[in-house]
Length: 625
Image 1 (cartoon, rainbow, N blue to C red):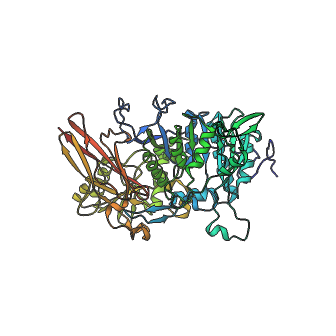
Image 2: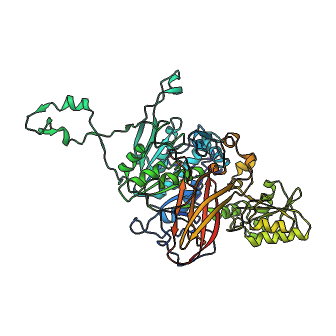
Image 3: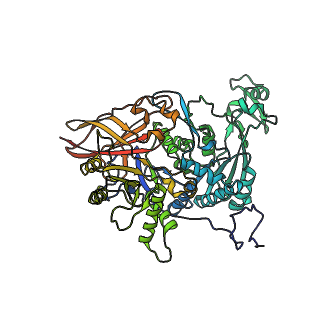
């Protein structure tokens, strides 16, 4: 039997230790971030002195630590393990408070209610393939995989905490005691501060009929990194009954009633109240609550505000790596804290973005991802020859893998064509660059030379200007070019799920044709106004029936749209936006007029986010006089 190297008492599970008995090291992958979108910041305030020929800015991480000096909050779409590791270089020891609400073993964490079109009635949206992958990663092997998932992330989160920082972990009754042991081993037994019991007082409905004590609490484990933690003690108001029973003396001098305390008079209005205990009576969010946004596991703002007020100060940095509907970030924004949020779900990112911009005083923030760098890391790790550093071999193995998932067979001795599926030729785009117009043109020329009549292009990202609808009535630039050669062209998105082995093994991979947006642009001197006129979603046969039944017009697919009035081949700068909310279901399809300061030619970029959280962009050139 292998001897396990343990320094003290702790929890052991398959996978925590190597085969030789040594503790398995937590992966610390550091990748650059891409800035996908900036929100609530004017284009003029951005540094545009250096331009690069890429779709996105690279986040440099050299900004100041205060809003006044240029700090921007950050919302990150991606795997929180990679995100936490990638934040290490710039944020090690810089985060003052972390709250996480990791998924429980119920599956409800990835379900939410989606409202379609102008109607108020919602439908339940089940797991996406990617969210299902996260659930399988967490619970696929039962507690064993849950322990490993939590351990790896908690190790990284501790490194991000400042020396006076704290972490609150929101847990299910089934796992709280296990995670307590794991956190003791990471943060230290002496840095455990409190087990907080949240009593939402919610025993109605199905819960109330259980033949047992009715379960009516959730658990939060509160740890600090060191003994030098920030803690702002809070008090709750005395109940009227307590005031009446306790403050019984009155000198009738106009000062009111008082009690004797430590040999002095204490008046009711000068008492701080009852110190807040570790049992929190905070009501659960009712289904009709105003702040509800459709997530089953959404927590009330009052809960997060209590945590943030207690364990951080104004201007401190707060982070949530399972941000879901964005409650932590909204609470931090309201309380004047800086924040970083992360989630794997595109829809969660979209909901959070809308909640933040709906707050009138929301400060500028950025939407980030790891994008091509995560894909490059995946390609090297899965297909690379680390010993010989053979990049060409890694690319060929990557192409063969994508072709197999697409159901195509590889072809040799072709320069721009990589495979064949039925009668269609297939080209696979690189992981670290957008598919370009020249790339598709070359593939079309090669198809034409070999008398092929159909071409499928698979890509991760796409050069601006090449996308258009593939029907016979309207066509984008590349579809027009293909038709002139007698070739049927399909442009299909490579889904992020191809990087998840469990999704691959289960056969969850689906390639979708690109959606398409159309607008009408009205120019009057230097004033420009944009009207959203069409949004086409191909592959509607793959959309759930309960969604399709509610679609009455093309705009019902649109949840959010925005305009960058002066796109400069960098990140999307949100200059105007419109979106649906729970209360306001109708979507404005006409932008407010935008007035340019100088005459000239400008490039507009229009972004549409559909009801599933997927975004589509299209650029337009306008000339103003």
